[in-house]
Image (cartoon, rainbow, N blue to C red; front, side):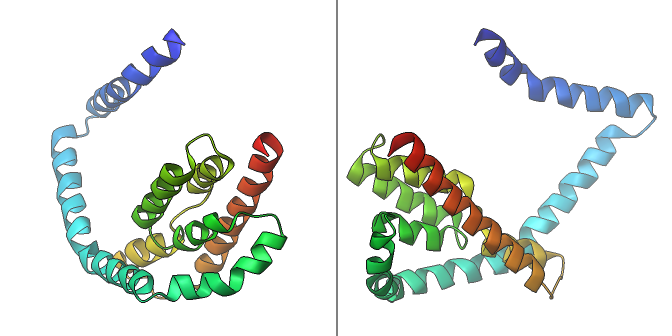
Length: 176
């Protein structure tokens, strides 16, 4: 355990030092390159702001309008027959859209049911087994100007579904 702590504490500084030394040996202007990368990073951050604002507004409208609750009304009987707790379904729906909203839902589920409950463990596992597919596509593809993202969307949502299903199966086997 002490070795893992030491490695985790020193890994990033050693990696940065290695990169700087290697770049210097290869006669790369490391500081100037770092500054250029910083400039590009700031430009990228500014360019994704409109996409972030659009996503946040869409998520807020979806939740505030009651559309999520309305959808849950119809899905709940099917989900409960499959043995899946209905409480985690909104998390599975929101997770591909927004990491922050999903984290808030996970926190709410853990507060309501406890961190060691089946629902708390399942929510945490779903949070770690899925990604923010719509967010990633909207922000990053939009920032670099990619318009055709249909295949990436399909694969991303399929991966989210696989992560959700795997989370249910694994948590049910280990903690059910």
